[in-house]
Amino acid sequence: MTSVLKLLRERGGRLAASRLRAIVQPMRRDGHAVMLHNGRSGSTLLGDMLDQNPAIFWDGETIEKRLHQRSEREDVGIDKLYGKLDVETELAAIRQRMSSRCGNRIFGTELQDYHLDMLGASLPDMIEQLRRVGFTKFILLERNYLRKIVSHLVATQKRRHHVSAETKVTVDPIRINPDRIYIGHTFTTLQNVLEQYRSFAEAARANVNGGDLLELSYESDIETDPNVACARVCDFLGVETHQAAIKFGKTTNVPLNEVVENYSEVASALDKSGFGSLLDSAG
Image: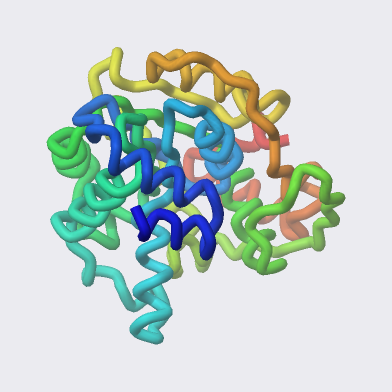
């Protein structure tokens, strides 16, 4: 108990309460949730809202946080860690956080498509491994792929990936080189990354039983009213819907042809690669 009091003094009540809950309550064995997404899809906002539910401990991108910690510890770029992670070690870390934080609550974590490349794993294999740890609920969160890429590039340029709900955002124009784009801590082509996003979603649908998969769209469930997505997830997880504060705002909120300087070039590349339909819903 002394350690919990120490945490309370040093790191605040929320973490201490989580540790105390883990001590006094038996750990939930199944029913845990994984959010599958490609980043810049409203996942941080939604995860924070879910974490405000007393029945849920949302850990966010557990693997991503560990990537950054290792990058700092070893003083290397994250791009140098491809192939140096393994599924067993990362799942052990997730299990440890489940044991020390969530008690009998549902534990939520997030997995991006490029994390699989980092781990050298396929999504079907990863889903099977996650099920063995107690993850039985899967949430597929998608956003218009072009919008997602633009949001990522803008955030990288400004070195600010999240803003508060009250922040007024200004966006400086960017250029997209269809033949060389930096996504997932590595360089690739626009067509390759779009195909990877599509394959990731298709694999999720093919390898998770219908009743265990909830599909969400940023445009339909988050953009106008994030409470819609939060309520859908709570219902999916079998917990009571709660009133959650919206703490994060949009980082890009202007038409793409106003933020992408070479919009016509990008549009042409999308048409040639078979992804022209993204332009119709990107805005």
